[in-house]
Picture 1 (cartoon, one colour):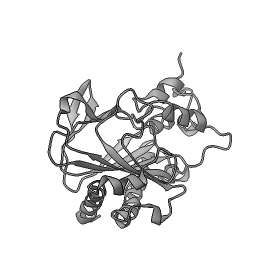
Picture 2 (spheres, rainbow, N blue to C red):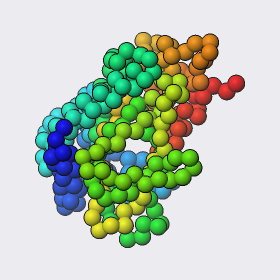
Picture 3 (cartoon, one colour):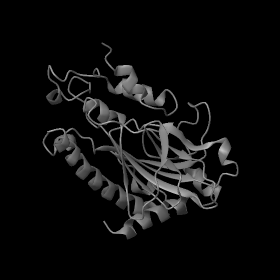
Picture 4 (cartoon, helix red, strand yellow):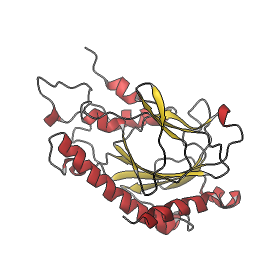
Length: 268
């Protein structure tokens, strides 16, 4: 993938966020589950405190928006980026599947690249960065996340009880394991806690995130640890759960860390 594609994607999202407020306001809504939405904090009315960022959110699958719904200033670039990011995710999913001893195409067969949402975040300059955060600490609830960011720092990951800076690398992408992958792998893969500090620089931090999730659940309406990974020597750590449980856990509160995992962990 040419580095120019990454730069064009970042510049397009930046161009959207730099538009006058009255232009962006046409896309403002709080209907999070479909189409195109512009808002400050997707969990604004569910969390105890707002974070210092704005977002353009687009559901690209399983039902993509009409192309005309996507803001023209970034339309071509984001439609193209969706294709590139999905190819990256499919390649990573094949490697993760092999890592569990499964067929390379197992996760794609389970429709983990079919349901996805693309989010273009902007973390503008914050005059008092010590009083807030860009986005609070959390784990991603889905299966896998592909993240592209510009050169402005701020992302941190939690490792061994320490927050470590993730320095932007030109031409690089970040892949996050989500809670859903931790569950279906029966704990073999672990979701990562991360956060973004409030931006103390005059230039905005831009990140483009594509979240991948399950499109089609099992015939019995549940999901959970993959049966082929379980055995008497490797019993399930988590119980099965429904789409309703998954949605209610996410949309019923602000973003947080491994809350669904905590709810469905089997206690011995």
